[in-house]
Amino acid sequence: MRDIKALHPDLQEKITLLQKKCAAAGITIGIGECLRTKAEQDALYAKGRTKPGKIVTNAKGFSYSSMHQWGVAFDFYLKMDVDGDGKTSDDAFNNSTGLYNKVGKIGQSIGLEWGGSWKSIKDRPHFQLPNWGSTPTKLKKMYGTPEKFMAVWKKSGQAATATKTEYKAGNWYRVKEAVPVCNGYYGEHGKYIYLSNQIKTSCDNKNGIGYLHNGADIKPVEVRKFDDGSVWFKLDATIACLAVGVDGKVYIG
Image (cartoon, rainbow, N blue to C red; front, top):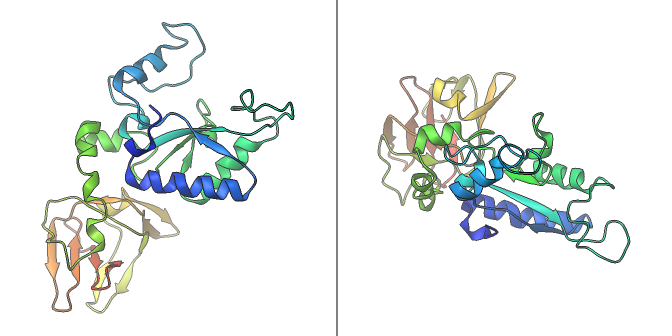
């Protein structure tokens, strides 16, 4: 399926940005495979196994093992004359001049995970959102099926407007901008912060500092509201909290 609108809203924005940055670099790309059905993924998995062709994926469709099935991945192709023969139709996957590598780096620069960086079965035309890891393991644990995951897409951005959302413990919310988490005192409420177990699964740890991803999903066990209008999320049994200030920005404190 080549319907970009069937993809996660955040990924749709990334695709638009990727195409603009590629165009600025003199590279024209088209968007290929987007959302895949279970049957489509199983048919792809059969290639090189029970069907003619070479193996192109290790992801089985019946177990929802492809990020394409979750609407958080897409493939691209080149829409330009790479070999100078006056045609573009024969250059869709022509990497003889390293254009796929260039697009891959551009995608990585805007926060996409590129299949060309994988060690097992490099997939240069492939990009995906990194928010839930490189495989659907976390998505399956959180939502069970792609349909249930897609049902919460409309909630994307809930955590960005504290004054308009009635936050409740036990609900899932999505971070709208990357925020740091580190040891020490932070914020006017003086809460002590450290990397809790839940935060560790949702962020990158770099030199003792973690960064909650833009798009990371959090599930607070406690919600506290303050007189200044800010809302603090207690992420687990620790005292690590995520706060949404009155300005709508996400803070750790």
